[in-house]
Image 1 (cartoon, rainbow, N blue to C red):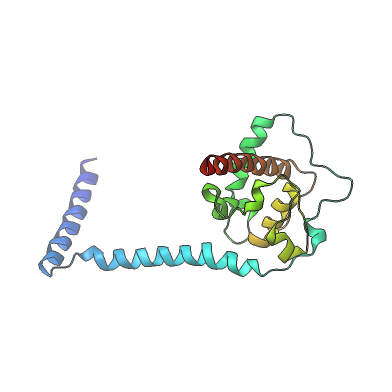
Image 2: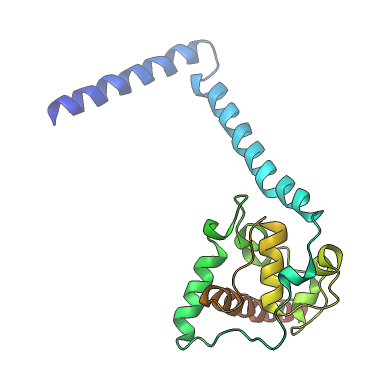
Length: 186
């Protein structure tokens, strides 16, 4: 333990000496590296969060890929509270993504929801019309569309608990978004 403390003290002393020497030059030693790191992080965020969705936004999708099969419904989930928690985890999960984006990347604190998100499903959504030629979408179809277009991923199986849980969470987000929008307008 004492040897570790001495090593840490020596490393700390080296760092302090470097700071003192740089202070003599009127510029902290960490400034160059700090600015570089800051620019690299901001650049990475810009590329990942801005350019990737913009690139994906031009992607056209076969509507059959994201349209619920005729006569099918979402599977019933017996434990709604557990499903909601699972949906929330999936909303922020990279497991669903091929390009590093999650649902939350775009919809953090209700961002990037259009005014149509205030309307009950099914309803018109600009991305669905532009990318898949769909006049209206259900909540689960919108989830599938976001997976395929924005997250550059494969759609989930229509009869999977993951799609049902994620759709349930999106509908919960919609209720919260409607309540927040209503309170803002009052």
